[in-house]
Amino acid sequence: MANVEFKNAIKRYGNITVIHGIDLKLDSGDFVVFVGPSGCGKSTLLRMVAGLEDLSEGEVHIGDKNMTDVAAVDRGIAMVFQSYALYPHMTVAENMGFGLRMNGVDKNIIKEKVDIAAKTLQLEELLDRKPKNMSGGQRQRVAIGRAIVRDPDVFLFDEPLSNLDAELRVEMRLQIARLHKQLGATMIYVTHDQVEAMTMADKIVVLRSGKVEQVGSPLELYHHPQNLFVAGFIGSPRMNLVKGTLIEGSASSATIELTDGTKATIPVDAARGVAGSAVTLGIRPEDLGKDEGSFTLQMRVDVAERLGGSTYLYGGCAGLDNFVVQRAGLDATQSGSNTDIRIPESDCHLFDDAGIYFPRLTDAGRS
Image (tube, rainbow, N blue to C red):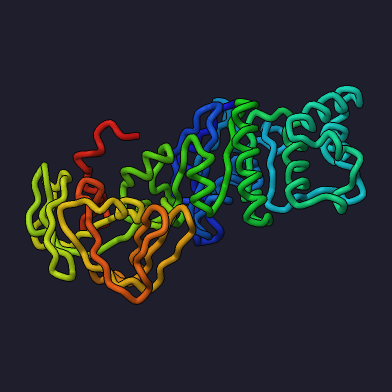
C-alpha cells in the first residue's frame, strides 16, 4: 500500500480546463471516495492516478515517488472499471491470472495467487466457469479478483457497481468494504452515489466542476459541511435548504427571518454576518421527527410515504416546494393535509449569502 498525492494537478482539453490545480494528499491504507455529480472530474482524477490521462500541469505521486511521466503499467496500481472487461472465452481462473501470465510470472505462483483471491472473494466454486454463465455480481468479483492477484500499491475503482441492480449494489458495497479491512490496502473509489461514499469511505473528497469542495470523514461532511453544495449533496434524503434574511448576527447566535415571516435564533457563530444579507437555513429531514424545538413551521403535505420503519413526508414549507420530513415508524399524517413541524434549533445549519457555513456551537467535538 502507498499514499497518493496530487500537486497542483491541472487537466485541459484544448482551451477547456476540467481539473483546476488540485492539491490533495491521500494517506496510505485509506479507503478514499471521490464523489460528485456527473462531469465534476472525479473519473478524470482517477485516470490521472492510473496514468490513463496525462497531466497538463502539476504532478501525481504514488508512494512518495513522482509518477507523472511513468507509464501506467509501472505505477503499481490495479484498476476495476464500471464494465467488467472480462475475456468471454476464458474461465474465471484464466481471467484472474491473465495479467500475471502476460508478465511472465510462473504458473504455480499464478495459481497460488488466484486461489487466495478466489477464497477471499468466495469464488472457489466458480474458477472453471466462464463469464457468460455468471451473474453481474459474480463477474464484478472476478474483476476485483484480477486486481487483487497483482498485489498493487493502490486499488482504483471507477464506478464499479453502476451496472448492478439495487440489491446487488448493497451486497457488493459490503464486500468491497470488508475487502479493504482485510487487505489494509490503499483504495480510491469513484462514484456519483453519495450513499456509497458515506457507507464505504474513510475519507470523502467532494468534487464540483474540477475543484475540491471539501475533504473529510463521512460524518465530518455530514455534520458540518463547509458550503451549500456539500450540504445539499451529502445526505439522503438531501438537506432542506430554506431561504431567509439575517436580522442580527453575533459570535453566539444568528437571528433570522424566513420567507414566510417566521423568525428564529440559531446557535451559530455569525459574527461575520451582515444584517440584512441573505442566508440559507439547512435542516436535515431526519432531525425533524423529534417533535421538539424552539420554533414551528407549517408544512403542506403532498405525499406521505410509509416504509414501515420510517415515514417520509414530502410537500411545501417556508417557501420550499420540495421540503422533506422523516419520522420514525408509521406516522398518521395524511397526504393533502397540513401539519406543524417543530424545528430543533441546535440541529440547524446556517449559510451566508455566498453559501459558506456559519460554524454551529454544537459542532465542537463532533466528527
